[in-house]
Length: 224
Image (cartoon, rainbow, N blue to C red; front, top):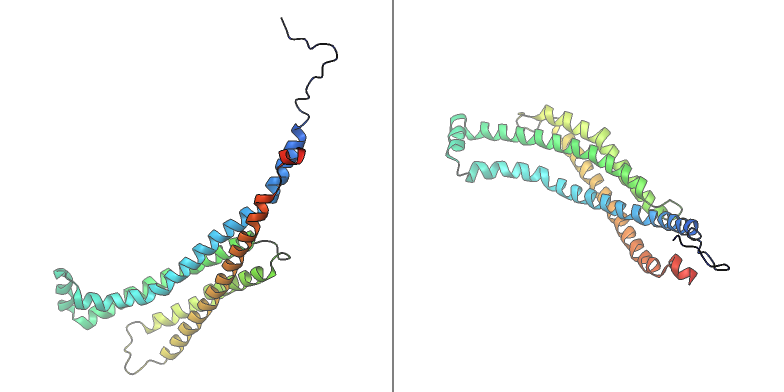
């Protein structure tokens, strides 16, 4: 027999709490969105800082490896080629290869930096909540764009004009090339400093928000 409720019995409203629960869930998701974006921003910052630190080692390592290979390589075929063409010629060829690798690495890294900066600005909390982080992120992104659009093409063009040019006496463009490198490195250091401060501020904000999130009442607790 089909179930028939007794006269006067209350029929539970199955959907009475549905809209309220859904509304609470939507509000909770919206409230959690800034925290999720902040954690994604920390991931972007970590990748940007790690890449920047690795790029500091790329150029010196590539050039240092040339002298190490010429002096200590155990590959007999390599030494035979060096002896055939002469150590000076082999060193110039290897330095040219290292220079071209560095130019490619730094160009692609600067493109990546610009993309990371755009992602970071999108993920950071609104400026009214943390103007310092926004300002420093904008400064770091601006530096990345300057490196990409201005300094990298200049260094690449001038560096290629100096390839295979004897350093004794010093060629005319060598001093300018060195100054551009110093300026590039200085801007990179300023950028890393900006990103480090933003990272510290975001971590501190996450730690401050964690106790508040844990103490936030749930919809069931509010109804109780």
